[in-house]
Length: 298
Length: 298
Image 1 (cartoon, one colour):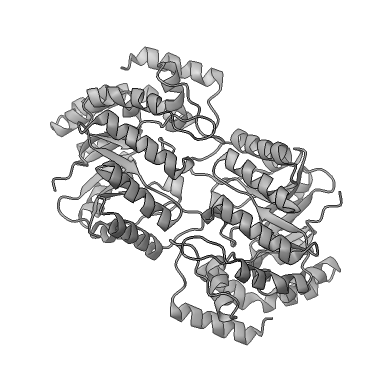
Image 2 (cartoon, rainbow over the protein chains, first blue to last red):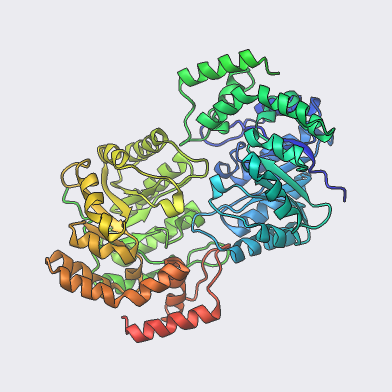
């Protein structure tokens, strides 16, 4: 298999009502421009897509709606993380049955997990689903710390095809990539999330950007990816610098909260994030609206 | 109301099968000796009781079984934590309907939460359930950091009656207690978890010990509480020192994993923890068995 997890993967919010029922029409309105912009993949039900807050049935409804909207034009990566191994297996099977191209599996934890437990979790899900798996390493949400050694061991489980790491500070990127590349098999995709630090990972040869901003602003993010892929580091950095006002908002309010506000400002969806997460206050939304206007993002 | 959350609260495991179905007979076998030992309260579905791994229906079954077994002899505190506010409300209403004395509410998070979000979460649950609420502050599992100021604000929400904090290192206990006492209303219970550090909080005047070890070894833990309550700090410390071999195992393997092994060793329940958490290896179980034998715990 040629690894399709390359380039730009756009991670939209999943609009839902207060009870957690997914607004599939709103989701399709979010996805249509991403398909039209030709992002390299869609990241449905990522952390920005609030996957842990949604029931299995609603995650399946969202997945079906996304597969309908993309209609084979863009591969869909679906978040299949869950606290219980049997739930993650069921979610992987659902995603496979719906036609997802891969599953994004985080080491969701409450009781802190050991390396052996996370390895067995990934083994069990990969074996039971035959869905290609992307390792989702996100310490800020799961509080599980993947070592490069553990990523390397999981990367050799049949069916595990990629890793989505949090982009380190620029000065640590080269070492981080080297540590992972030395341990994963040939053709394995090493990609990064954490929008404000990702450009340097692309310039350094990272395979993919798992991108929150692209959930609403695919063109600006695609331009950075294409510049990096063409070897034009200066242009990639120039375009990234132009995104700095958005990155500042992401760091201040969290990218998830900003993207809910931005979807409302753009008139695509007025959905609130799942409680206990609160919509941003009016003053914050006004600042976001002003920044988006000044940046002239489309 | 006289605050019943004083003294020893015993937190047993919740035995369940691989699919997450609670073994109510096994649970009753765990609870009966705790009732007989006259612990001051039972902490059902705490972190050691694996509440986040169980469905709402199974949590209700466990609660009903516990209320049946305790039969009014010991107040039952029930874990009502959930990632979604509406789920926590439903769990609080279930616990109230089943006859629980109070609900234990953690700031369960995936997306990191703000203080305002956690305050609203507690307000919503307290208002919707009329169940007395104990604030469950456990950074190691939720990764939400409660300030004393936030505990103080939540403590003034009608229906919030207690806080369960993680016991700090001995040299920090006096300041921690002072910081909380200054901010909570009169009669509000300030208690601690984290067995190996709790004795000093009791000696310093903490109201309650939310105790994992008491889930199987109530007498040894009650002796410490009663000594501290009688003002005999030396005796409390002597009894605590005798528990040191168990505390060492808790720190090495986690109290949850040790308690599953100990329940099996004692012949009460051979249930495994919920996957991805793995049963301890045979060698670790053998060490635990030897320590328990040498300590002569009952």
